[in-house]
Amino acid sequence: MKYFVLNNSVEIPSIGLGTFRSESDDAYKATLHALKTGYRHIDTAAAYGNEEAVGRAIRDSGVPREEIFVTTKLWKSELGYMSTKRAFRASLERLGLDYLDLYLIHWPGDHDENKRTWRAFEDLYFEEKIRSIGVSNFSFHHLEHLLEDVEIVPQVNQVETHLYLQNKKLQDFCMANGIHLEAYAPLMSKEVKTLLADETLVAVAEKYHKSPAQTAIRFLVENEIIALPKSVTPGRIEENFAIFDFELAKEDFDALRQLNRGKKIFPDPDNWLV
Ligand SMILES: NC(=O)c1ccc[n+]([C@@H]2O[C@H](COP(=O)([O-])OP(=O)(O)OC[C@H]3O[C@@H](n4cnc5c(N)ncnc54)[C@H](OP(=O)(O)O)[C@@H]3O)[C@@H](O)[C@H]2O)c1
Image (cartoon, rainbow, N blue to C red):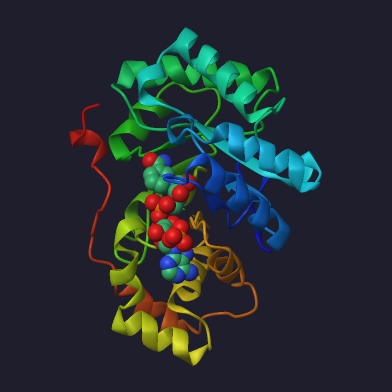
């Protein structure tokens, strides 16, 4: 498996198992199966309601804790300094872990809220309760404001990214600031069938005797983006991980690059009120 190195030298596996919409029992089985398959990175969130199940699977897997990269996220209702500290402790307790590998602000609030929240993230980082800290669903202006006075530059920005929404400009901006892009919904989530039937993608996949899903994930990883495909289906969990034995030729990579069309499936953080 390929690892990327974050701006604080922490290594992060280039593929992680997504667990959004995985109910507890499914999340438990999927996490266990993923760890057995070779995944070493699991992405959950307080809002998914499955932290307890994910944590239990991590413990039951027999894989040493230090080999697994665990991410969870602070929900929007908990933004703020003290509320973040409380929510973090609650997440850690539900997970049954004593530290996190990555903690993310799940959705941005207003700029002041983001900054107050970030102070708590930095303090938890300095207390060595979290190995890396980051944000999610942050666009340019959220990052620009946050970066005005941070002690720690976020290690990661997790945003919706797939072949139809490649986020090249946001990735360039993030990279220029040392922030690594993570792709959520790498298979286009509820519209997975549309993506996997794309003619160009199918044709490229056939050339390598790989599936469209593997090719779509491979494209992201070759593009230095961490991919978080979700599945609760054992065969698909295995399929999505088997992407490290081929490399896209430039012409195929370029053909996939052309599929970008700015298609956003999840809400726009600037126009979504919860
Ligand atoms: N930060 C955020 O705001 C945010 C938002 C959304 C997601 N995320 C994270 O990103 C992860 C991935 O996003 P997502 O779950 O929305 O979508 P996704 O990973 O793009 O797609 C998941 C869907 O694709 C199906 N699938 C998976 N592998 C497949 C394969 N090889 N062939 C055919 N179908 C396949 C899954 O079905 P089965 O499960 O039935 O196999 C599921 O319906 C989430 O689970 C979560 O961890 C974060």
